[in-house]
Each structure stands twice: as structure tokens, then as C-alpha cells.
Length: 546
Image (cartoon, rainbow, N blue to C red; front, side):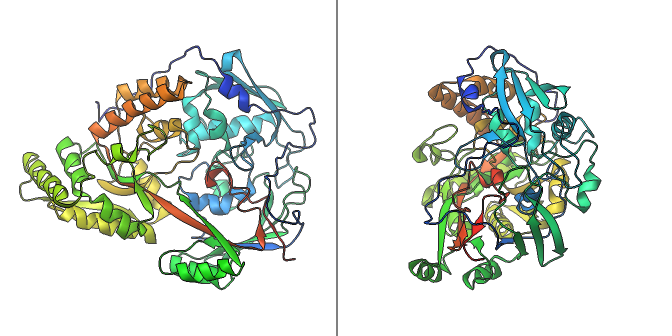
């Protein structure tokens, strides 16, 4: 493993049957009306036009440039203003968004998109192939050398982009890529006008989306209004969408329970009885599901002391009580995980996961911590050491940071918590300007390709570790090309084993989140798709209260 150098990833090409890619390619001969699959609904009535829905967001937007963002916070406010090449209207469906049809050619190494002729930006400019090419190149870092933390993962697949005319875009790929269509649905992969700069989008949104920004009262709310020129006939259903800014989760749940919000957080342990009473009365409903903020654990900057030493990274991994973490940080709404939780990616069982070092309990955990103290001594720190633990300045992350600080103290690693606001955090860690960091990964598409290509490949779009291993780079391409699910899971286990041996990241758990809504809010549940990173935009939401 080479922890310091970060050479460009070698490109590979290989022959591959592309049945899985062709299967999701969609098309229509009608260039005026987009294909929109309205997810099936259990409500007795059909969607109604008009009205207002109110949903909680956690903070003011610090940008409307979705390409620059690594945080779902920006999507919660910004996704409503934009469209993508492809979209995910609900479930696992992948359909055209600004395109009218798309197909694959050249054995899966070329994706051809035919664009609609009626997709307009807020200023009336009609979207063309030049705008699409510019948007994709901006994500890939080819416009200003800044790779999009999320959408920049597409650079691992797209070799070049052709625009033979205003209505046609061709993506020439390094190799067939069945994962790419899903990645194009992530709302970080939004379309902007050619020439739009990051500075332009710091001030205001400028997209083709279902909503326009009507007003913004900092610290209070954003009011979004229906885009009257939206190219999807009949959408959005709502007249307005109010994004209510409440940073404190206790206050957010109180506002939801008193019907000051239509869409908000579901219950925690303290509020469960109140939620259950309102559900029994038919007033609200909620779901609990594994969060996209996964896996969780400790990131270690492997490019500089002290965590360029594998012995210290092993000590950190052994120090953390995963079962205590689940209880304290997530009220036991979590499950043990490595890079993947049980049943996905590497397809391990829970029993296999908890057999890895660091997951011991009771007396066996005491033995792990003693081993960790010995590792510190071997690394030259018999009396322990002092480090700065970077923590995102948000309630859940602060709880995580405080818990990790206590766990590390038990083996002699004394921490000072460094609280960093979201807007400053990701630029900071992208510069590798940290030592150790409590982190929640983000899974936008649930495909293993995204995890490897974003976080662990040399020069990955979110490689905040400085990590580089040529064998990981090679196996990434191999598993990406593999169609057999059993063999692909085996290859993903190999990747996971290599990374967990190198330990640039000490995994802990995957946590669950709860999402709640009052029963007058419709379409919110039904339009949830691959992840909420693909279905924030709200054009299918509607209200039965006018």
C-alpha cells in the first residue's frame, strides 16, 4: 500500500455483456411530454393541484451549487430547483428527465441521450447539449479543476463527451458501466447553464426545476413557488413548498407534533408514545429505515503522523465499543457494519461482521483495549498521546464525537474536540487538514461502485483519507465489470478485507432514521426512491388540504 502518493487511476477496458445497462435504458418518440412514472399510491383520492406543504430543513443553504456540495443539507434546500439527465421518480425506476430517450451502443461503452426541446432555465434559456456537457464536465473537475465530491464519481466512467447537435449528447465510457445510470440520478448531478460559475450559484439557484425561489428569510424559512413553465405537464402539484429551518432536533419534533410541519422527523425514544397516539388517531405516519448516512466510524488521515502508523490505526479500531455506540449515539436504532452492513455489497452476515476486530463485548472488549494500549506503546506512545478530533457542528455528530472521545481516552488517546460548521468542514477535510475525524459516509445510490470510487480509489472524488492502494484500484474495475452477483459479492469482500487490513477507516455501525408526515401530505412516501439523495425535489408531493 502506498499511503502518500496518489497517482492517477489506471484506466482499463474490457468486453462485457451489457444486459443490465440496456435493461434500464428508456425511451419515447414523443419529444414534447416527458415519460413520468407516477408511483402507485394507496390514498383514496388522486393527486390534487394546489396548496402548500411545510417540511423541516436543518439550516440555511450555504450554496445552491449542488456540484460543490458533499452534504444532504444542500440538497434539502437546493434539489427542488434542478433537473438531471436521468431521474428516479420512485422505487428503483430510472427514467429520462431532461432527455426524451436514451440508449447504449458500442457494447455498452457509449450512452446516447436525445434531449427535449422545451426544458427552460428560470431566465428562459432553453437547455441544449452544450449545457449538459458543461454540467457533466463541471462535476468531473474539467471546468475549474474542482471535482464534485458526490457527482464527481462519474469521472471514473466517462472518457469523453460528444455533442453532435443541440439535442444530442453522447457519453463515451472507459468500459461498460451498469452503475452509471443510477449515479446520474443523484441530485448532486444537476444540470446548469453553460458558463455558470460556483460563485453565481452561491447567491441564488438557476436551474430548470419544478420550483422557483420566491423568498428566503435567513434562519427562518425558504418559500418555493411552482414553476409555471416547468416542462412536465401538470407538475409540480403544489403551489408552494415552505422549507422551515429548525436546527435543533428536539424543537423539530415538537414543531412536527403540533402540526407546524407537514413533513419532519419520526419518533425517538422520548417522543414515541406521542407519535404512536397520533398514528392511532390517523393523524400522522412514519417509517424507520437504514439511513443513507453510512457506514459510520472514524476517518484517519493516513498521509501524516501520527495516523500514518498502522499500529495507531489498529489501536483506534480496538478502542471503540460498537454496542455502546449504538446505544448512546443512536438509541439502539443501528446495526453493526463494516464498509457494508449485512446483506449488501460484500454480502456478509451479521455474525461475520461482528467477528472482525473491534466488535468484542464484555471481557473480550477489555482484552481488545489492553491490546490497543500495547499497540500505542509499540508505536512510541507508552504514556498515550494528544490529538485533535474533528467533529461536524451538528447535534448528532456532536454526540458521536463526545462518545468517540471517551472511548479513545480509555486507551490513552486524549482528544480535543474541534467543532467545524458544515460549510467549512468538507473543504477542510478535502485538503487533508485534519488528523482524526468522526464521520458518517453517504450512500447515494447503494451500488458498491459508488463507495469504492468515491472514498477509497486513488484520487476518488471523496477520498478524504489520502488513501491509495493499487490493488484496490484494480479490484474496483474488476468487480464493476462483474455481472454474476455471487462473484461480485466475493470481489467486494476482497476489497473490504484489503481496506480493513490497512484501516484508514475504523467502521462502527449503520444507523436507522425515522421520517414522519401528517396524513394530509401525500406523495412523499410513494415518491421515495433509490435513496433520498435521488428524490428530494418534491414535484410529486401534494396536499389534500387546499
